[in-house]
Image 1 (cartoon, rainbow, N blue to C red):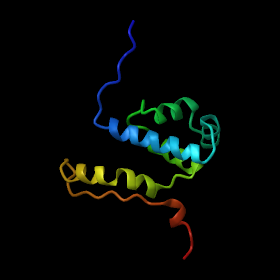
Image 2 (image 1 turned 180 degrees about the vertical axis):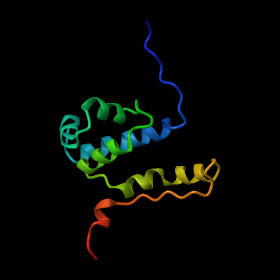
Image 3 (image 1 turned 120 degrees about the vertical axis):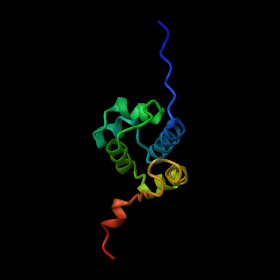
Length: 111
């Protein structure tokens, strides 16, 4: 039986950007997928699938756990996806809605 092709999703381009960003940050941190999976609590198979864009709508919490371990902060993700989200928000059913990404580490620092 032939391997099933991935179904089209409007999020495939975002999934590819996210996977690339996570892979590059993990590499810069000098960590393997197994090390990140163990430290984050995200299963190795899930991390691998996210990095390869096989999960087009990954769990927010899984992504945040991975980011925390590899040192990829939310503001970097906002830089990657902010413009795409802004253009969707201006045309979708929630037009005008705003999404704000908070860097948890920065928000917990005292002034």
